[in-house]
Length: 318
Image (cartoon, rainbow, N blue to C red; front, side, top):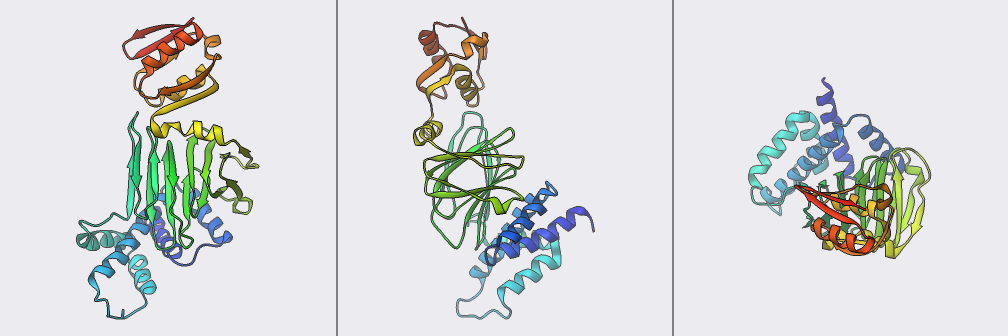
């Protein structure tokens, strides 16, 4: 059996287990280890969960309400998915998909361009605000709501559902909530987590026994390398960090270099600081993320800098 076929077969088994009772810590650790061993497995699992959702939805559409199934649904789906592995997945998506041409899609991918911020209502009623140049994949089963933050940043306002925890995978970082609001941002070396409502649990894949609770008004950074997850309080800082949801950059003493790096995420016209000492100047205020030239001119007035515009480059110097 090829590695790809083996991944699909194992993904089908995991999809069925995730659709049953919630995983305990040992099972979650086993799943995380399996996903980490091969980058292709996350996509295989998403496809398997989507196929399982198709089967559930297709059965609801095609079977009479009063009819009793000839075999328990769990075993029927298990035989269909595992018996055909990749073929079973394709058949599930294709055959049942004909019945669902106008229905909701079990797996959703949301991708934003540079400068674009999207607010999307998910199938369960939760809200996902996806920041500039970001991508998420959403897969929902009867027992779990799982989001993969492949790149960038997103803020989630989660509808409470204790029977279906809301889990975000961001590289090796894992963040789980039942009903709360929080953001996750992928960075070099790990992920930032900011909680605005409720409580989340955060941990590093393979270290499920070291889950850390992060409450509203707190933030943490989950490093890709094993280590303690430190929680820092700071409601005001969190609100400023999430100003991007309304198209703004909020500064309260951050450096010009920080501000330029953030604004450049949203624009193809790039700000450049010609003098390192200028980059250390602190700034205070709210600025539009889509107006880099106006930002440059405002900074010129605030710190006595000079602005030169050359094509798509906005240069700041003493």
